[in-house]
Length: 216
Image 1 (cartoon, rainbow, N blue to C red):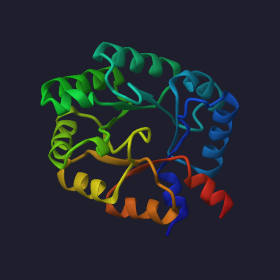
Image 2: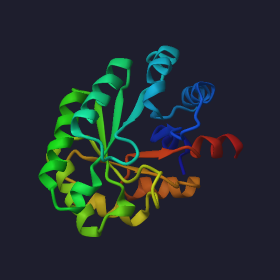
Image 3: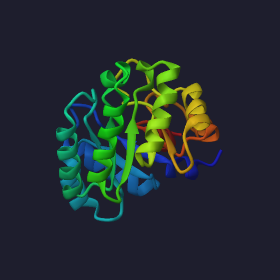
């Protein structure tokens, strides 16, 4: 197990509603110290975090989070606002109700609109696997591939379940060339983190890995 490689794949995350600036600042300090891929933080903290870290740590934030059923216009505005504030990466939640109703054109169109608003910044698409059938997960692999997004992401961590090994393996089988995978939600051990990477995940969304390394 290569701890540095695991850390380098982590979006060091703090998204809970009670998060304070002091906690976000500590998160940024830890990300710099341990060499994580980014910090993933609420939109309201993007600007102060960017001013605090400069280019030393990549800033990731969330759009349409956690439910995903905002309008497309609202998600596009959130995206542009976050990028203006200094976000380097965007993790957006799909409209799950539209997907489940079979309105896949809406889902694809919305991702493309956020993709356009992102410009050249990294876009990850959260599909909330715990709420989807296997058929819907496979369809989302196809939609994300078609949309031009950079990543498909398993979960928000705020629903009924998080990343599973089976879901990451399924995504690896069905995403198109160039689409990467982010496993997020419930990654509790370094062994689990390594297994997700072995199954094909490129990023890990986690609040625990840095703590496990620090306390290990």
